[in-house]
Image (cartoon, rainbow, N blue to C red; front, side):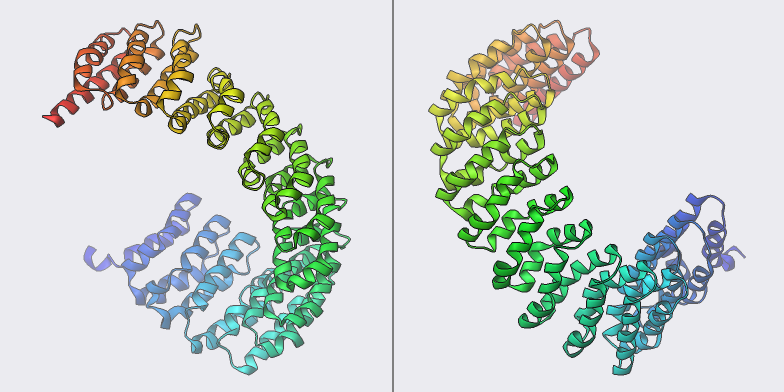
Amino acid sequence: MAMVDEPLYPIALLIDELKNDDIQLRLNSIRRLSTIARALGEERTRKELIPFLSENSDDDDEVLLAMAEELGVFIPFVGGIEHAHVLLPPLESLCTVEETSVREKAVDSLCKIGSQMKESDLVDSFVPLVKRLAAGEWFAARVSACGLFHVAYQGCTDVLKTELRSSYGQLCQDDMPMVRRAAASNLGKFATTVESTFLNAEIMTMFDGLTKDEQDSVRLLAVEGCAALGKLLEPQECVARILPVIVNFSQDKSWRVRYMVANQLYELCEAVGPDCTKTDLVPAYVRLLRDNEAEVRIAAAGKVTKFCQLLNPELAIQHILPCVKELSSDSSQHVRSALASVIMGMAPILGKDSTIEHLLPIFLSLLKDEFPDVRLNIISKLDQVNQVIGIDLLSQSLLPAIVELAEDRHWRVRLAIIEYVPLLASQLGIGFFDDKLGALCMQWMQDKVYSIREAAANNLKRLAEEFGSEWAMQHIVPQVLDMVNNPHYLHRMMALRAISLMAPVMGSEITCSKFLPVVVEASKDRVPNIKFNVAKLLQSLIPIVDQSVVDKTIRQCLVDLSEDPDVDVRYFANQALRSIDAAAVAQS
């Protein structure tokens, strides 16, 4: 009897679990739909599971969201593309729920399914679904419909296409702002599927209506449509229809619309072409850079380098640079930060002379900004300027400010400087580096913040790689070895960390003669943390030194540590001893 009932079990269990009061149980059940469908087989999935899901009126959004997601990949479980239409009813009902995330996921799944359906099924099942949603009484259905037109339109007859265009036009004029927002947001996608003959006559009429909408939330979504539609129109049409809209939007009474223009400016420039950018969009961009709202200035400042790439250097110097100078002392720290993150990229565009004359003073003022993020953004892009003006000028003009930042009160700024030091070192050369930055590198090893000390230890290793072991023996190694006797145990620990990082770079001879005696001495430290770090360090030295040194010095030191009263010291010492034995076995 159990064998006969077994195929019924999955669907019966699913029904029980989906009616359970425990939301987690219902959620787990939905996420196992594909497993249940496999157990049922394609026919029973179509006839029993999908109808059950269509009638399932779960009121929890999380469960509905999971169901919308699962159904999007369900085509193989219902028998392939010829049966894909059976998945539409449950997704249609999900398109009408109030929760936005559920609707969006249902629309996404419908688009996936619709794009795979045969043309006949598309016309018989998918298009009627879109028309029903578009004519729905509840606004949620009409919002969902807007995201489906581009899939429905492609495989239709001319009569149906006319109906769909007309229906979309009505959605663009809907009483509910949410519906008009969805129509504005999806207009670009729909336009890509519409024939060019109807693009000017119908789609652009819908677009014009949306650009004049009373709700700023609709108009700001129409800004995105400018770039999408501009790519579909002929160049002269784009200039006539799209350019005036962009210029008007850049002066819109709502700052959110102006923000969208500033954010999308590069894409909008690409749509209208270089000539119109120079004549019409430069004045519009200058207005946005000087906007009353800080949010608009932030978005505009972040695009300054990309925008200047579209102009010749003379235009950029004449129109954009005066605004950049104003923004570098803007009252909003976020505007200055946005500018600092991109301004270095202007150096290659303007060339050496203009960079020295116009940009260097701005870089210097931003390097001295009171807000750490501004300083960080400049430091991290210094190499772009170096490529243009050369290291001599960079060192004269910007390096004093960089040295000042090396002692900045904000640790993230100090960290950024440390990470930049090896690059500076390679660019400046040994002489200049020793002169200006050498002392700082050891100073960072004793910083109050662990991340700075760790970065400083890594920095010493990278400098040893850059300048060679001879230079390191003169300038770094003696100071690191001195630190092992520092009264503060954290500084002694950083010295051990630096030794572990530098040993592979310095080689066997220096490790044995200089590092090893100091490390062995540190194994007698009174602080357990130092001792177990010595054990870890000795383990890392095993591959670097000769086997005779391992047997004579390292093993004896580890044996002593393995008898230490502290459990952690014994653990790491024994671990290191085991690795010595393993290495010996491998060699034999």
